[in-house]
Length: 135
Figure 1: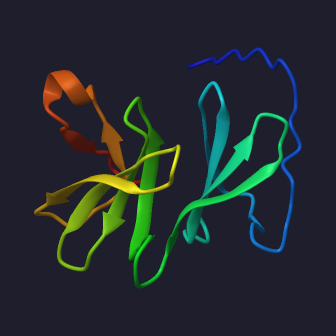
Figure 2: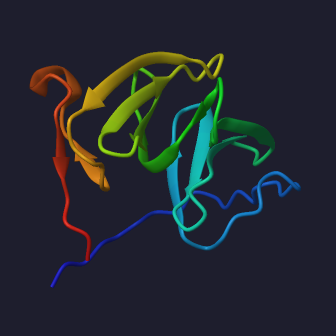
């Protein structure tokens, strides 16, 4: 039996606007400056908040055209920026966005269809992602 212990320092209520209605199935990633939230039910955007809970907008959203991606499967935050696993039909891409200006700084095409993936050490493993079976 696994037992987890968490120390909660504070609760930060996130600002709700007409642009960020979220369900209760959320993936949350923290950096020293920001909170990033991805709604795993809606899968339409990665939302950015500051640590006081103020909504700063979407770092990326789904759709056609510049500044959008086709389908977000998963995301993580690294020293490079916000890294997305994006579905492209018959293959997937890892898209890296700069946090400062919300622009694509790197794209890596994967010759497989994406599923939720677990990232292992990016530098030592050369950016390899491992598939994690869904429950």
